[in-house]
Image 1: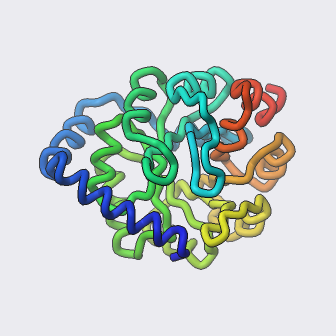
Image 2: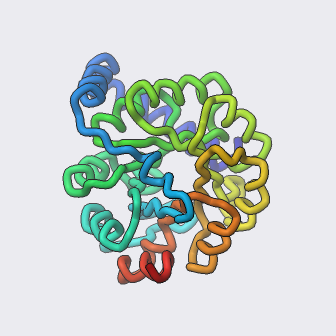
Length: 264
């Protein structure tokens, strides 16, 4: 685990412990299981599974450790609605507070105002966070191979499935791909951001593409800025892209989505 990721994970464990004092795990689990049993279903995987068409997961992201504040006039619901009007298939919501200025409340508010599937984007280390995600209205969660050992990656993957959450399992280091596949992942994310340096390289997805089974859906994450980038990824067989910062920095978010996706 990189130094930056180590710092984030250590802080996240403290956050989880504090959250468990506010809402007891048994109570939150009951709430999550009730939502899973009775709540409406939105199929995150199906929304991305469109042969011949690259799909956009547009991210609601206020800040990041590498970039600082990305958008000062931050209205998460309005941003999510704009993304959808301009063609986003799904919306990713940053919920990490300390490093990304996100919040679970953003996810909950967006859920009540849009109809597309939603991803909780955070550093998921504990089943408690899956319950939080389900109660807040997530349809999918991000699991990061670099911050989970084999046991916890499999455990959280299976627990997410049991709750009706679609796991998007992300890796950066190619050596972690076998672990991702062994956990059972069929929706796989390649992070183009080196978590040691926070530098991005679009070529990273293209280098590892041939290693990923063709029956898995592949999502390229980070460093995607132009329609030309999208075309290169689509030509390589990438199924979806997750884009946040390059859209959030633009004054006209809708126009930025249009330019990224290109002519309909």
